Length: 480
Image (cartoon, rainbow, N blue to C red; front, top):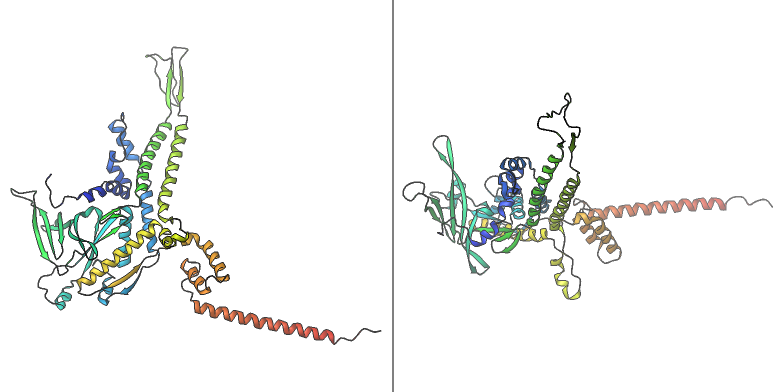
């Protein structure tokens, strides 16, 4: 097989096996129906018309798409924090990272959704080419600036690597792009092209549209870059290697397809069961059977009889229970992302405790932070500046479920002198038991004021008691 610029590498092909299923599930009922027999097989004796009717009425239970959306939103339940060394010019660009008005947080949220759905997405930190730009002033006058371009997994065709000082580095990267070009006064067309990136240079390849070489790929454009490495960053779901990622919800996706097929069977049997079958016994060919409210049936034989045959309903109940079982398994598969692995508490394994206490989603979020930081560093590099950002996402996903139990443990630890009251206070804030707007110093001042007020009230009550006692001592003694 002849290789062309759009040829997928073996690593990409291994990941791409699952993408049609994921794309269809994300696309919803319409996409699943369009996939036809790929995810809803045709029965051996089923006619084309019957299958078409069954497919037309099938409806998807969107467990995969909804779970991915909910899980992807969790790391952004609070605004991401950006600290470290970030030049002011770069910090300003983070308010519009893609030159389309998208801030860093919503842009990152879309990347996280890609990570959970397909397991891989990439960001090219690019810089627009401009004619006649020679100085920084010229550059700013044209509005040229680095920006992020998102490449979903299906757009990544392949790559080559070399080992550098920081580990594996890209030496070549091929990306599929679709650009829209004007045709005439009113029309436009979509053109597919392959962008090939090398350290310090780039190429764009397109198919020849006409002539003897029509259909063949040819170099369309090329150019040089001021940055001496490929400014592309991978974001992973479950990382299986450099540039290789899988969706952490892949098992849920397969269960969702199973539910799609089982639900179609259930809907079909319900349709059959709701229409009783008329059974005629003992009628001859000359007898006419007309069933209706204003009609009568005549038969020549005394043995003739009519009756309706109905479904017993046992298969319907079994199918209903099967659907419920699949839904329970889907819920469990989705919730697995938040389950923390058991902590290791033996003396010889204490160093691994933090590693063992992370959930899958927390691990994904930590790798995601590193990729996002690399994108910011590349943006600074385009501007001949250096950056060392520290980006942090919200990762305490289990805190809301364990808040009550954790709060009780913290209070007991503070009372027992294991941790300070200030530490317990801050931890209660972290798990949303105490509002983040409450400040420790001000709260301590309030508590001190309350204690002082209670002491004053106690002293006043004591004085009143003493006064009442003196009055009793001054009473006249009883007569003898």
